[in-house]
Length: 151
Image 1: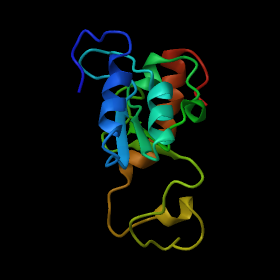
Image 2: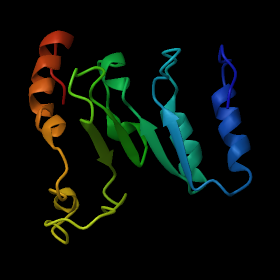
Image 3: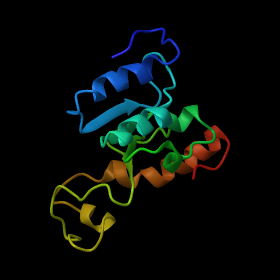
């Protein structure tokens, strides 16, 4: 936890202090905080955590609209995720998850189980997939509104 307004180095100092216990296994950071729109230097925070063996999750929901040069792999996080209803104007429930190659396996068994990472997340039961199916169109709309390619 850090105080606002954030002083230079305060976030890094708070993370170092938390990591001293060697009990931190996963650290979660907002790339851009919701209430204050503060941009955290998640690259340096991720480096601190990974040096101590902690996995890093970055909530990138606001990153899509705050950065025109977003390079997710360069951030050094293990996971980068967020929703798409904010900046893509997609229906609630649509979201994204980026992982490093080693990061995870699905927590449920689907018809694609055992066929690779993405296939492990295939159709699961009677869930409503409408919001997910709307994501490509929401992406096309965001390209128009934000004025550039979203890769």
